[in-house]
Length: 202
Image 1 (cartoon, rainbow, N blue to C red):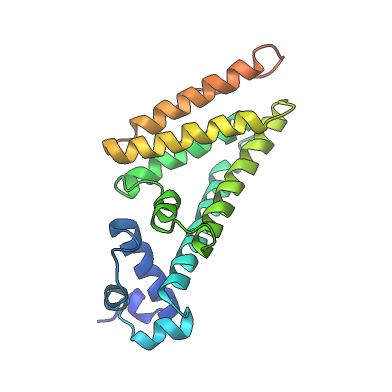
Image 2 (tube, one colour):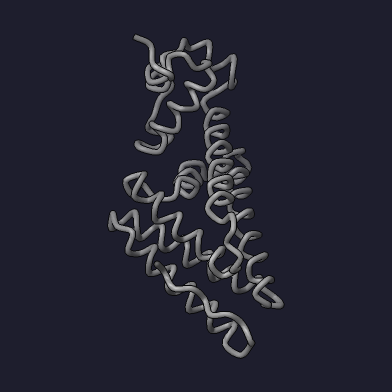
């Protein structure tokens, strides 16, 4: 009996296989033969649809980036408090860490496996991180922070540290702590202004 994956187009099956295997085992550790076996497609399908394994890696990361952005858009819909929208990123990261069984940030993992700054994979990682930075800059601007850049830099360090700690401890506690520290950092910047308090974690 065929499954939905069996009925999907080869490109979709390869992308699904990449998402499963790369997230679980790492990109370099997964060879082409494993990808083809998981996707149940012929070798020619990989090269006809993507051209190479590296191109499939880029497509996989682009697809994940799109999912992350749309997931954030859904979760933040109707959230009017900029501080809450900012901190929502940490909440979603904690949920994702549990769902992915604490494999760490897939973008940072990919960057580690592709150290050449000119590789297209690094471009995808950069685009994702710039999206996150711009999201936080926008939220901080709404909160009245005149020059949000330095604060965004600190939030990124907290976020990356929380994800790395979560991977090391196989727990969401480092992400939760990073969120609390981020909320405190924002509150310190707003302390002298007539602003709403940063929401606590629920």
